[in-house]
Length: 183
Image (cartoon, helix red, strand yellow):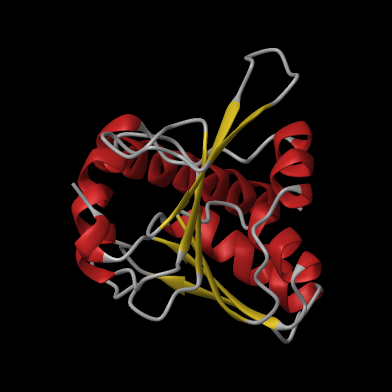
């Protein structure tokens, strides 16, 4: 029993240290979407009946599972580069498999988003600034982008959802328009 306890404590210490290191590297900790924000976001999703839905920075996987359940005819892909939340998502997926859901241990800046029909994210201002260029280069006309809390600098949302929570959270909804209509 003592050996098991020591192993468990070592595993917990390793997980904690890993989360701290990846939080420093990424500039943000893996933060789950609150239930209130998730409810507002899911009930106001753009009309995407089938296609590819990408959650960038999928963290612990909670929103990706909800997206897969809400959009059963869509392929839902979650990208997470922090190992502990990623493996947590994998274990959760093994215990509660969903055919339309996949997780990848990847840096979302390194993967192509060209085939995405909907991109969902809950990141931080610096990441949104960096993603703006990636979105403009890679996302096809008509692709939806839904961002929890942080707006894409310089973009005008089609809709801004006000969440009645402690932080007065906003959810921003965007749609990629044809290049010849952009300023």
